[in-house]
Length: 324
Ligand SMILES: [Fe+2]
Image (cartoon, rainbow, N blue to C red; front, top):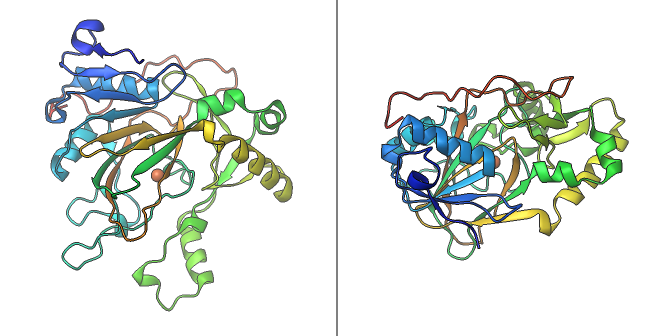
């Protein structure tokens, strides 16, 4: 049974009367009950961010928010991102990335079926997205979930031969194979579309093993969705080694499934987790609002000496309560 602690009395780190339920030992995902997301001050925001870095995923229970409050809550943890493809934007709030198969007033809004493969957000850019916030808006009737894999655990438990293949190496990440066709692509050939998107999102390289900027944890940073090769390794060999790594990671005992509940908001650390959206059952409706958040820290702090970064994290955006 998980320990339940009241933040006000047990740790003295926060002033709110919300309750934190940590995950079971070795697990991921804390749950926060009783938080009023419209009244989060800087101290509370810093404590909540500590929970995210510690437990990798935090679920705020029963806190449904309209768009402007939702964006303000995200701003407690950093700077909301404007996604680089406008067809994903909420019509009135570009900070909100809409995943939806439900038209609004006869208009298509957002994009359906996003992220149904293992990935971390923005892995294919030089500045990947540190945090992701997700608010399910319309829940499918029969299946409603997002799945996660703990990449700290994966690096720790990866078989020795695969660790040896990845250590001190960079991986190549690319988005073009996940591009979703838009209305403006009509009359273009597949080759033109791929070339155009490939120019916008050229391949990038990141270390296969990251060092977290806050807790110095070592984290495996490859995904089946976006990682296309290993730098300095032949194409076939790299593909084969990555396939073995993914087979290891994707084993059911490594997957944490979060089932959406009405009114919950999720916040997770993309450095430490990869995730996959669940399929929406045929004929059912699904809408979720995502906000990407830059927390103001480097995505990773790999250093040749392997030392823990000396500087403590500077939490961005605090001091003007929204709250924050
Ligand atoms: Fe995602």
